[in-house]
Image 1 (tube, rainbow over the protein chains, first blue to last red):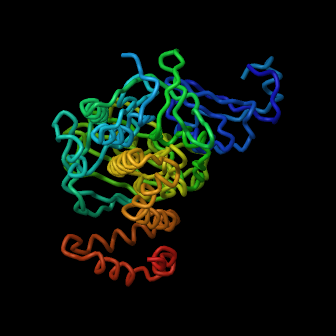
Image 2 (spheres, rainbow over the protein chains, first blue to last red):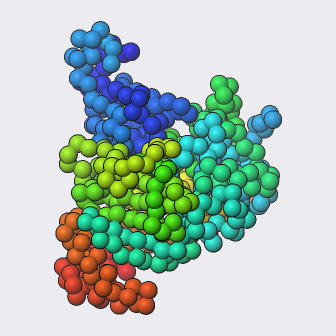
Image 3 (cartoon, chains in turn purple, orange):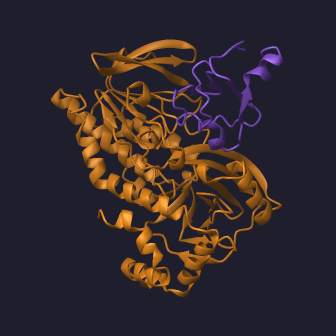
Length: 77
Length: 395
């Protein structure tokens, strides 16, 4: 897990909810989300915290977690 | 099994758009490679599966293996449950996409195309402002394949178009968030009728569909527009609420999720050595989000233009220009109008939807011309004329 990020928010994927459909991929302006064959990857280094991906997800599998909360958990999302 | 170093046409994505492009390209004598990132052509399905079969027939002989139901009519429901029956304008079927997609790709193979599943495009080969092929990851192995023309049929989540420098990001208010169950153990009053449920309390900025797949199974799905959703609920939450009410005892055989760009065709769908087709080019019909037939038209058109361009020795953006021109003339303009209709209809209150349905139930729709229907509706709801000015005037 990344220990730091240029912006205050981490985007976390709930793998139980995520249907690996890629609905969130095209709405991401910096192209920080990639749909692979069997998993979804979010690049938090290029994410700009616009949060557009969160409401479009049909199962609300993505969530925004403040950086401090991640730091408080030892860098784990 | 070994791939060549170079092809005439590289098609990225094995859905209906990509398969049709590969099929037509191969029939025109091009050396075609189609790659599919998923482990299996046709799965996972991301579709409500209704399509006009007369439009499919020119590409692949109709087969009962992939036709689940034939549709006689559509029924539109308001939030209260009141409904109106509308005959379909084109003969329609509900497909078994898993089988259909595979057979369509197989048709391309029969025509001479090469296909690789679980082979992902990880980057493009770009030289002098031209896309000259792609870097593939095929089950862990990196392969560079050069191609004269690359057709990106990689769906709503298309990254190939972005990498080629085309603007593909949809606006959130022109993007459907979709969820669908394949329900079993449902009782359908008429298994030859497709249902649409509309109203912002049921599906904000979208609608719910019930498409029969035989006597006791149905695709029950929803699209919503996230900007119209104010209560922090997801597409699946709304779908669950509907299913709980209408089909409380049904079982779920599958859950399908996805997104559909519905702003009408992208401004730029070609570049030097690159063409976008299907959802990657935002070619779905904006109101319904349906795109199987349109994707196949686009794949066909793009492959023909690519074959002509390759024969002429010019596959620059200009050399491929016939594709956007023909698309705009034959389908693009209609999609742009439907996009304006969608923006207008999104704002309708439930009460207004019910009013229009009330009116429609009193009219003999199958005996009326479109003009008669429009005149009747305007007499009932004159404000519509003002709201519709944006898409009526340019025509």
